[in-house]
Every structure is written in structure tokens, then in C-alpha cells.
Amino acid sequence: MNHPHHLVFVCIGNRNRSPFAEFFFSKLISQRDKQLVDRISVISAGFMPQRMKDKMAILKIGAPNPFFGRTLPQATRTVLLRHGIKVPDVWRSQELTPELVDRAELIITALPDQKNDIARLYPKVADIIFTIREISQWEGYLLQEDYDFNKIPRDGSLWSYVEENFDYVANILSEIEKMLIKAYPNIMIRMGFSKNH
Image (cartoon, rainbow, N blue to C red; front, side, top):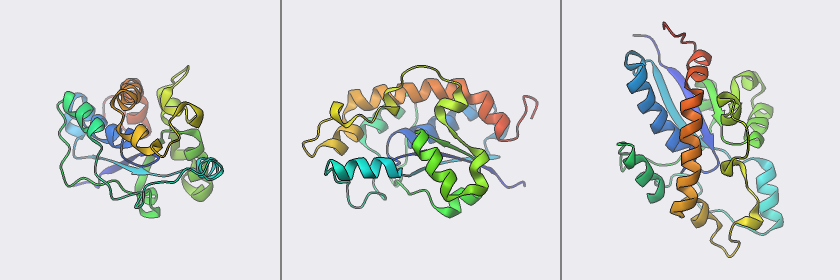
């Protein structure tokens, strides 16, 4: 049996956008290209770009500790359930590691800063890193790219808001869903699968 092709979705904490992409895109493959289910490994991971770390430091906004190894927020779990996707209870968030990068054939980030930072850290894979906006050829405003801290509560509840507020999370995941559907052909081509496979 051939080794699977590895696709990695990246967001900041690996708790909303990238796990949603991991499970939703896996379902898309099973619906559109069932013969590829065992040939494509879809995973997700978290990576906080330096510019966001700097901004948080200036505003004295902390991050949950530990930042990784956490469960899927109920908001994301609920949205996935509405798509008929049940995430195993044992699932935990993980950090983007050199090992995950080395195995990847395609890395899709939520944010441009992530793409740029990962490309600087791992220059050998710079040509396989795309933002979800790029790979989907999306135009216009995206809530999921808008990290204007002035629009988000700064009373210590930043992380509970961006990870647990159902309306906020559902709106972002709706954007991700639309972009993944639009990006599907481009992703499959980048993974080395033509229309005829």
C-alpha cells in the first residue's frame, strides 16, 4: 500500500478553524473521492505567528496554559455535529512540529502571518504553504482573518470569546466551510491528484 499524502491545516490554537477544516475536508474527500480516503491523511495543528504574540504582549493579553493538548470547544463540536461529524472525545489540540512539517505535502494556514513565519522557519517547504484565502482564491473581507483586538473583549475573556462564543465561532467556521468547498479542486491538484487520479 502506498504511503498516505499528508495535508496539514493550521490555525492559532488548533481548536476551531484547523480542526474544523481537518474533519470537514476529510468528509468532503469521502463524499467526492471515496477511493482517496486511505491515500490522503488530513491533520491539523496550531501555530501562533510572532506578530500576534507581540501584539498580545503589548496589550498584556495572556494565553491559556497549557496552550496545546486541549479538547475541542463545544461550539466547534456542535458545528461539526450539524454536518454529521462526531469528533472522538480523545481528540486534543497539537502544536505544529518539525515532524508534521517534514511529512506535509501541503500546508494550509488560516492567516498570512502564519504562512510567512512558517516559511521563514522551514524554508525548504515554503513552496507548499498557502493561506486558505489563496488556495480557495477567495476575495473580500474575512472575519477569520480579522484579529482587531479592539473588536474583541479584552477583560480576560479573549480566548473564551474566540474559542467558545458560539455566534463568533459559527460565523468563522461558515467562512472556512465555503472556502474549503471552493478550494477542493485546487487542494487535490496540489496534493498530486488530477481529476482522473
